[in-house]
Image (cartoon, rainbow, N blue to C red):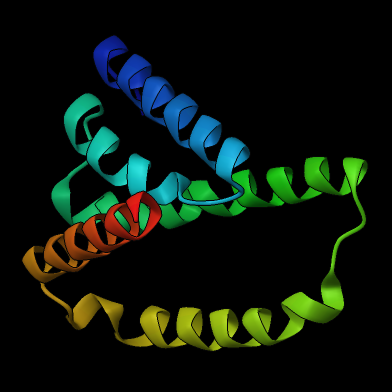
Length: 121
């Protein structure tokens, strides 16, 4: 399948921004990737969230590996979060298609605002 140059470079720029944010903050690349894919790349609105998940998994694994080179990973402390994240991911994988895209955008927007306000205060 041939991708337009504009779509290719827009997707590359979106990935660069998401990877940069994920690397600097150890996460949150997906919050950048969704709007960036929507603005810069030729990703259909119905495919935004699945595309984001498929991109952020390898980016997060790379960030994890690079972070482990400079400091030991606190697996014992992270284990409860890993279990909760896995269960949440499975539930969204099973039922996420039933959530309207408009509501996904609203939920993401609220989470971004909440996170921003929390970090400013």
